[in-house]
Amino acid sequence: MTSSDFHRSSNEQFRPLHIVYDGLNRVDGSARFGFGNSAALASVSGPIEVRLAAEQSSQATFEVHVRPFSNVPATDSKSQATVIRSALTPSLILTKNPRTLVQLVVQNLSSASTNTERDGLTAAMINASTLALLNAGSLPMRGVVCAVAVGRTSNGEFLVDPTAEEAKDITEGGCFSFMFAGSSASTCVWTNWRSTSGGVKQEHLESGKAMARTAAQRIYKAIKTSLGGESEDDEMET
Image (cartoon, rainbow, N blue to C red):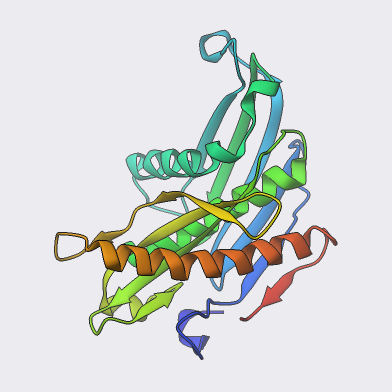
């Protein structure tokens, strides 16, 4: 589905979710996640043997590598990897497997030309990574991280998962990541909320976070549903 095919019925609606467990060879877990055509594929290996230079005596080493869709500078991929690692680390219990390596590889499956589109792709990469970790089941976790983009338009409306067309009118926005642990209660573990006009207004940030939290809860429910049947492609429009 392209952005032009998506017809929003409410500000809280995101593009159809795609959740697929790919079963890639030579990895412990893999999964694909997409908001419409903003999609990513992630794979997890580990805990495995770690090279001596990266070994940590008290916990596992968590490495994240991002493979670009096309023509993306290496610095951008490294920046995306840092973001994904920051968002996911709070959910991982790395102390259970010291002196080992957990390696996460994320492949972008779509391009993004604006900050707002990049926020949506970042959310897809984080969610794909969470799915791959759950699919692997080899690393203890204290929660499930779900991410979603939210933007504020020039007329003050907040939109969940803005499309490429809607991005043209976004003046504030960002990606939010929440960790869910057992119930619907959640903690915001990362955001990059920003304004195109300079200063960020706290009330706008809080409104964006509240909308993102509700949307992330729906993503969390979709993930839990998907774990009941790993071969299915869950496509939901909410």
